[in-house]
Length: 197
Image 1 (cartoon, rainbow, N blue to C red):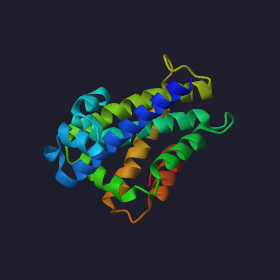
Image 2 (image 1 turned 180 degrees about the horizontal axis):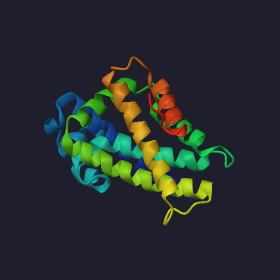
Image 3 (image 1 turned 90 degrees about the horizontal axis):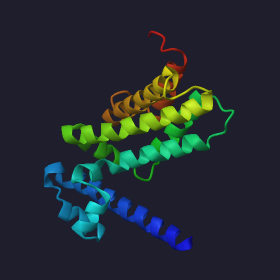
């Protein structure tokens, strides 16, 4: 069991090293200036090892976001069962989006992604899977059925839009608000039924 745990930790560490290298190179050189070989070299692995983790450079570049989506799902599953679902969703989104140690890197990478249609597409594919899994968690917490009820899917979709919108506005820097304020405001407006201004 320890051997498997060690192996799994090594796999996670390698994936993180590759995605971090890809993200930093994309910010530094632009997406067109990034190669699989450069990513692998920066992470200290072979190009063959790169392909064990990612099909292409685009997936590696957006992996910090798509892998972060899994952290949101795991955190949502771990929230207290009696906590209102809107509160649980807001808290897990806040936790996922607020690490300050990589704030500048995150902003720079988000700007790169927003300017590249291929990266936007890869990011949206990952977020779509996140939305499906969140709908399953919401269904389990609310006594609904993810296979036939609208509620868990609408709630998961609304939470995803709230997260993306708050993040986009924050990265653009035009609102003057900080990210926690934007997240709280987005979720409060949704929870209130999105009243008109």
